[in-house]
Amino acid sequence: MTPAHKLKIGVMGSASGPQISDPHAREMAKKLGAEIGRRGYIFINGACPGLPHDALLAAKAAGAFSLGISPAFSEYEHVNEYHSPLENDMMIYTGQGFMERDVVNIRSSDGVVFIGGGIGTLNELTIAYDEGRPMGVLTNTGGISNAIQEIITKLCLRTIPPNMVFDDDPAKLLDKLEVAIRAFPLPIHEDGRVVDHSEGNREAPPHLQERKPG
Picture 1 (spheres, rainbow, N blue to C red):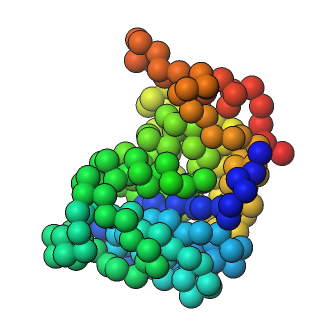
Picture 2 (picture 1 turned 45 degrees about the vertical axis):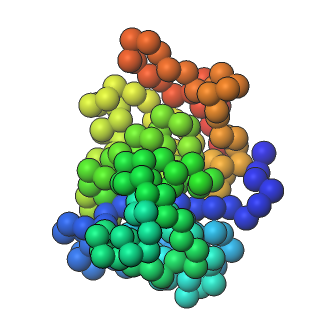
């Protein structure tokens, strides 16, 4: 079931660190944003600097409406304490800090794209994974982008769900992500498709283990 509204694509990744000055990562972020805008998707990010901001500017230049979900309580705190930009068309000030803001960011998106990334992106990744959110990883963009499959399968001993897709080309990645969004409606705890195992051994939701998109 495809959402009735325009698709909302969250872009998450390196807001600081060496990746944000890598020319290739920045170029890929811009291409990703431009492709989101070209397709008429709504662009969502954490209203942060770095690679998600590069993607934002390109998305806006291509005509996308953008939503920024800030960890700050107010515009003043956003600018002066979090040192973050204000270029999004619409801002939501959660006042919840980085960790809780990430939950709002992910739950507001129909699908999430990860680019580059470090510790903060890992937090976003685990939230999206546990909640069964469709995910796309833009590989070869530095940070954790090429390590995510190993982190999930070898370190965490989990499976790659079929609504998680990988590509190093932004347009091809979005093609795959749109298929995943259509194929796998979002699971929720209330309908039994997200299962918390008491022994702490979490698996992908059952519906993600049974079929593949396409």
